[in-house]
Length: 208
Image (cartoon, rainbow, N blue to C red):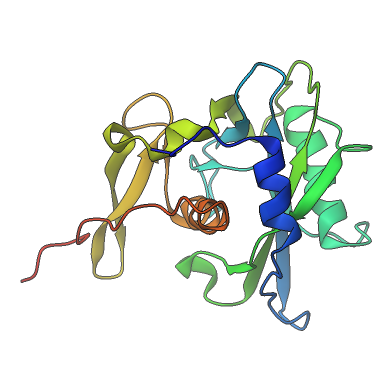
């Protein structure tokens, strides 16, 4: 657990000093997500979405940040993150405070290394009511300081190559609202910037 509850000033300082590692712009396909923070309800909270189950979507049913593929109409990857957030949860980031950018990540094994995903961090003072579209099953805010509570560390069963389990963080209903994979990796980098790295996790699969 955090030694002290993180504040927005803590986040601002951490991201101001960060120089993100970026994937080459020559990557064939790009996507972008928005890590949106608020503190109007008291503690700093982060916005998560549960993606709807859709055939052909490599992130079908996953817990995630709002986001999606960069399209021709998007001037920048950040613009794509802002557009997707508005489309998926009805939250406009126009005029929101852009706090910084996390390290780029490659997408899931299903996309090999052909998809690069960028993550931008925003702060909204009064986000209002979230209104989800057909791509999102549920959207909700979760306290940032609760992400490091040991009772929330779970194993997420998922077959990827030789691996059958991945580290995850429970943010809601057990077996359903588990942050893992790409979103977990973005969170891992973000929390490390705050000086609160996720602890060493179990060996995902026992040795044979």
